[in-house]
Image (cartoon, rainbow, N blue to C red; front, side, top):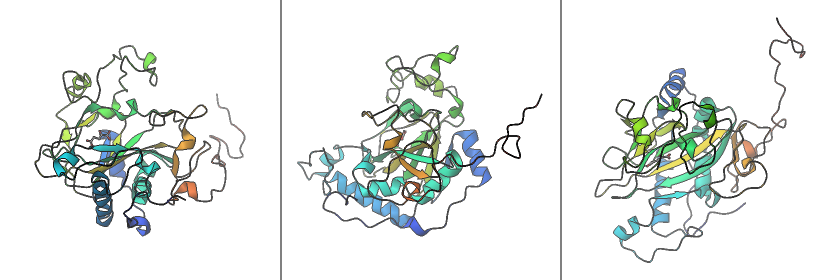
Length: 332
Ligand SMILES: O=C(O)CCC(=O)C(=O)O
């Protein structure tokens, strides 16, 4: 097992012994109808504090990020420009792995995309004053899973509102297909559609250049997700969503964002890096449930389904449809 990178020791998350979060049917239906769900106070305040401190230690260079030069200044305004987000920290830092596999987040994911949950990706957003913002996009454009089961999880570390760059969602837009761009290889079943046009410059903050804006405009005004620290936004990977730069002079807009899929899906994705064989599943961590596909162990040993003894290879003994004794029954 590796140890925490850098020079500052961080306490462990608080939520490991909390009772399981059970999703209400109305919450499930809200997610299915609207493409997103906000679960208030899902993450403990003590855990929010750990993540905030860790994020500031990264920004101020008190913890070294492998491959990233240490800051040459102590001036806050200059440090704010260092980065507004960092990707895939769970492969470098125990803290990020712990929050990727946060039990109460996995509890909700089991209900929304599970029961078998594969943890794929992490992003720490700091969005200091004047920084951040991402134009309209759909996450499954970037992270491919087949069948497509991707979901985003946005843990608020600060109060977020329109001024400091909260997430905006377009309820109902998760029913849209993934819009391809002309510079990318075949995505999903795009050739099966009669009228699925290409879009350009997805994620650009320039709404003229980013032609996914036209699709978003076909919906009522987007909903700003006003959240408090510890609130968690679950959002479907086809949902059109965006954020604006932080316009406040003195507030951060920090969030820890992770992506997951059903662990029975193929994942030909490794954050732009290569992998061996037909898919990269063996590089991603089994958070909950089981799978017949390969998966990774957490590098820092965070307890999750991957670290538990599992009774079978994930195939199990599923009853056959229409059969009492295991023989297939045919009807005419
Ligand atoms: O939080 C943000 O500013 C954007 C997050 C986002 O769009 C995403 O994680 O897909």
